[in-house]
Image (tube, rainbow, N blue to C red; front, side):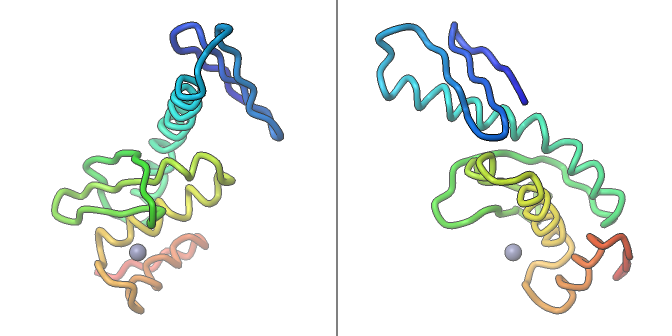
Length: 133
Ligand SMILES: [Zn+2]
């Protein structure tokens, strides 16, 4: 549950609904903007703790991260910059999906390809961390 306010608009979420309170006469565009901002904010609240948790388990450092809308990917990363990007649409999915994508992209910082090594490092998720160095 979260209650957030931007410029006299309120967005409130429970397990079933996202409720939006705005000034009368708001345009569809304005409503969409507030909802998008709410999605971005909920992700930005949740991501740092997940990255911190998995940095220790996977033994990799994320130098920077961001949220953006992507049409074809849940996540992407820049290996040189040690930066991961997460799709804004993840805000609409259960939190374990967000965690899965974060882990997947963090593992790419150690292994670029979707190969056996990537799979093995990802198995850290089960708490049986296998360090590959
Ligand atoms: Zn991948």
